[in-house]
Length: 306
Image (cartoon, rainbow, N blue to C red; front, side):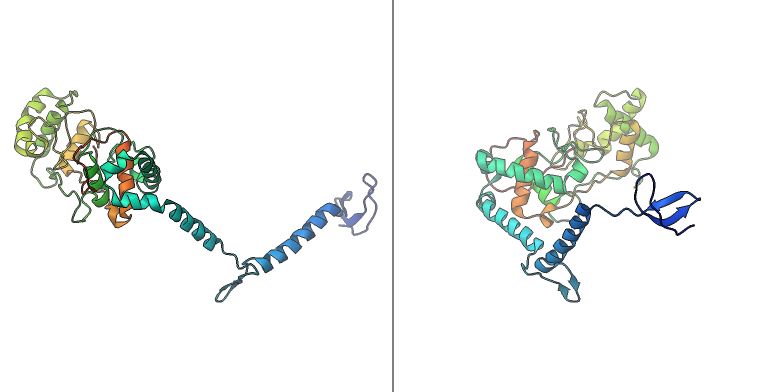
């Protein structure tokens, strides 16, 4: 590699003297003046920024800067301003019953907006962004409810949840007929056929006939003789086309075998009472809420749907 400088004949620019393979030269072409000036200006700007704003970490914190600006403080200021602006609505929600809030259009719309945000942050992971649910997670848009769909029932399910250890939670559980050896596999298959016949699905007629007595002896106490369900016990209606875990023979057998025992958190342990009310109103507004003319106070029970 040569180190002899020369002027490139094509560009007229001096080379650095570095040559490769005998004729490949490196041009010594400086950066444009505007680029250099911009670069120097950025250096000066950064020095000024370090002086004016918090910038450098120290042993006990960080340099505060001349302005002593804190983005954390600014965010907190914005949050406090938001809370101050909406304090009157939150106070009204706290003091009023859900039924009365529903009659106040302005307050109801505020609650729906807040409830939608809370739902997205806390509930959508299981129930879906559109509350459409999924396998094992109830669809909140229809009018099929395990524990009831009026204000009070929805409020209780959200506030205290299902089978989570909270003393106020819905705690009724379906027996584990297979795991606890209450029924054998043949009996489970027969009763699954009978349960599926409620929804007019294709079943083994002989098996369904045998399963009828098994259902009467083991399931009717909760689901009713006609399979219509019982919201007081969280027993789903078996005669419609809505299934929480699916309607295939295998899925129904698994439900009978294990009892499923789904769990829902007690949101009153994580959210304040106003947030619980807003969530209740939002879920109620999705389309499946059941009217209850007697609802006049803040509820104490709530929604889980198959």
